[in-house]
Length: 312
Picture 1 (cartoon, rainbow, N blue to C red):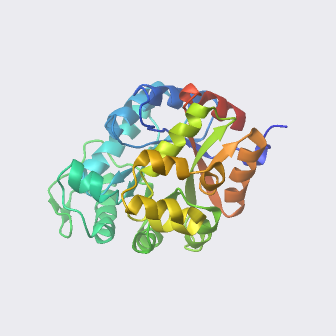
Picture 2 (picture 1 turned 30 degrees about the vertical axis):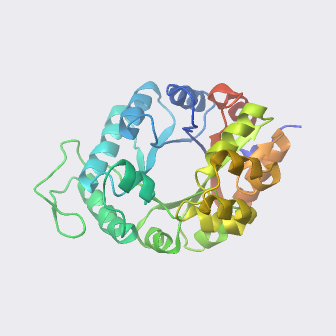
């Protein structure tokens, strides 16, 4: 028996699994359009610039709503962010959305050499300025970000801004100033707090239907990167992954951390199993009030075709 119609995800997230060919992102995007998923999220990791990839996908598709991000608020100023999402809107001929988050010290400070800290305060100021730019107003803004005299030539555009809320401070910002909240790697129980803000809530849920050994290894390897990350470690501990989280904090090698991640532990923040099991996991998040955005596992399933087709 396959998944029921009420378990259909609201969207697809382009995954950037380690060791996969970069152009797999385009395969996932085109498959999402073909299967009529309503929304496609285009993030950024070690491969493409997010706006470049989103623009290319916008030109190749006609139906799917593109959300760019979550992108770090510390790496692009609000004017560039507004220009980026505005460009995707114009290229695709339909409104694109933007999602922002804090990212991590490793990405912001180590990779890019930018200052890390105070992201929640900066987010409030950034959201205000981005909305102003997208309305087509000439900037005259002082705050955490300053901009004077800029006006986009792309024209006034709708603003749909999502905030990734990995902690209480960012949750407060999202509740006050965002159009939507997105959560990643959370158990169902974490959805309730976000739903209580009154804002729409989206959840990224890594999923694999009938995964092969390569897919499970891929998921374990990627999950080890989040065990000790700020914001994620506390949530993963509450989800029951406290032992591998503490091991990660103690510097245990990733290969050993991966061996600690049983299927039962993984399924506390993901959806891995046969089609019925994955459908029930999706329905549990939907029942808690969240729109589920599937992150397809691609190891042993190029482009996530088996998983996305089963859930469509």
